[in-house]
Figure 1: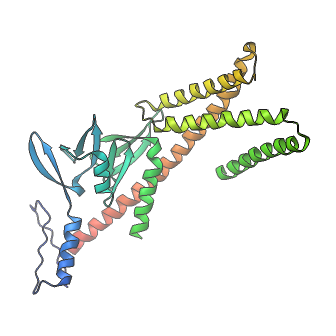
Figure 2 (figure 1 turned 180 degrees about the vertical axis):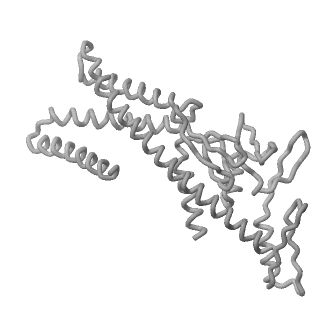
Figure 3 (figure 1 turned 90 degrees about the horizontal axis):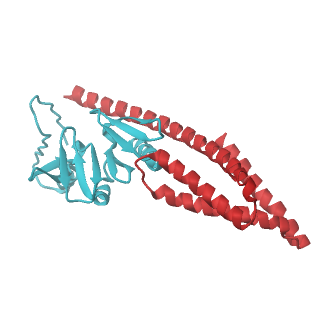
Length: 151
Length: 142
């Protein structure tokens, strides 16, 4: 199988084109793999529905029993409850940082303690999110398991 | 060091219980052992209540420490009053005993949090470097 990767200026979305002579099990498996990695979640903003790529999600938060999904620049509302999102995103690089918040590990810039023993993470877009100290072990373990996976 | 201190204090606790209970059984004299049981029960109640406060998410974490301290003081004062550990005139001694233990515990907690934060920051840094390297490799391939 030949793999061709191409970076194009102006390309808005990642496209995968599979050229095959015959639809055999190898091709089917390949399609399944790609479909698994390209997961989406639906969210609404101003009454319009949007398809949000999971890797674009920075964090998800539950406020007054409503769940919000935050990307680099936008905020979407989802009908999913936070525990459903946790279940859906556990296979991806997400970690729960408080009872009400779930963060994409790939967008973390740093974590710090504040003067009154509060904790705060800074995301790569500069946004700051509160962390509960009871979830520190959870974060630590998530990173450790990802490191093990990648080795 | 932390594990050593933990092991040392745990051993001290177990030996204290053992040296109180065994002679009490042998000599059928429970006067001294009763206080140990009272102390053990009081600590069990405090630990159970702290498990409950761990579940509460507060906007101001410092408030959690304050609730824990007040709760511990109330438990010690209540059980102390029931089991006559003190006379009202010397109730302040209960505060003098509880507060230093609590303050030391609080600072040990802060040290542990700071250590965890340091480890997580290192993990974040390593992950970012790995992601950047991966990105660079993909660009080079193109």
